[in-house]
Length: 365
Image (tube, rainbow, N blue to C red; front, side):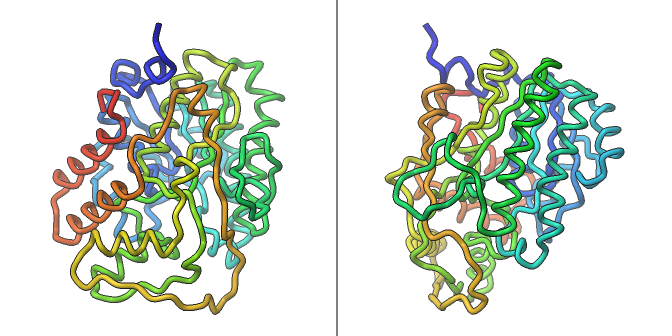
């Protein structure tokens, strides 16, 4: 008898030939997902704006040569629908978002519009294209954060102190509404995913810890820590992506039994402070990599403690992290250093796939 992890494993035997539509494919997580899907033999069709950072994961991996790309905004429903209808996807992953908490304070309307209406537009497009499975990626920030020591389960109250968190809570509500009102009756199986702080090679977003550290270390500068004692459930990008792929397979094969929200986070006892993570990253980087702590002059609210309970994904899907944060930090430092040492596209792709394989030990990659 197969175990859940065997049943929904990420393998080329399942993904070969599947048509997969990925919004946000030019972003950090989207590029890693598109690379993985291409390696598994899927036909990847991406929909996104042009990369919002320079450099970017998408360009570093030359993803234009591996997937079809529709350039557009998820707020543009007609263009989004036309691209999705042309793609005729079996599976849809929605990752396009304004993904930064601090930016949401500066651009609240853009954040709410992109993350709320953008999600609704993706689901509206799915009404006409009727893919077999849809996975909407939100965030652990969708929960009403009580700053307590207990991890959040999928049935906890939604909420948000800042515009970003509120937008992700609203996205979850929209997912439930579209599932109940439209998609379930159409045979479209819809789930959402909530992951903690994800890091990995190729993220150059501003005001994110590891990207800020990589930029500083590569320039011989010290990174400044705003909240060194904040605790986060850190994990390498390939860990939750494996969960998303397993969930999509379960939706295709089992249907509505998996059309729910799922947390994908590291073990609860492995959460680390910001300072501990940067210290480990500096050690992995070597040389004169260093950091300093200074109070946040803007004094913008960010959660100090937010933990996830991923037992549902472990019990239902058989998903569980296969690496620890220290491996992830070393792997990420290696990726960035390879890039800054002018590593070729082939080298960076190979390194990324090696790290994916380290996470997906039971699959074909």
